Image: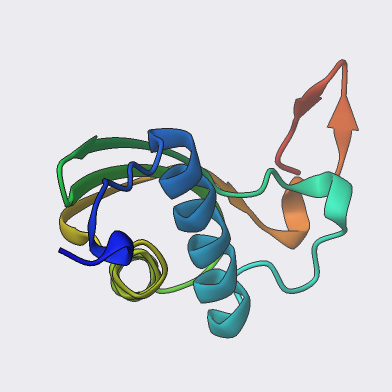
Length: 119
């Protein structure tokens, strides 16, 4: 066996989570989910991942603009994450659970006491 064929490669869950978070950000940016929001008005996507051998199960939390097609945006996030994890880490992604944590609209910009209020 050639030297290049011996050994093993292990990719930490947090590395795959970083790939997934960035992929979700890319998907939402291309879908225009964060348009009109300043960087301090939303939280970037956050992913957690469980890796077993060459399979990654992903959970990602996102914030979306309102109004928007939530189903289409979540579908775009799922597809992009599966595509990027497969391409960059060589893992299959049979499951991507997307949680929409918050919706932002032009009417939720008034802030008071650390909480958002709808006018």
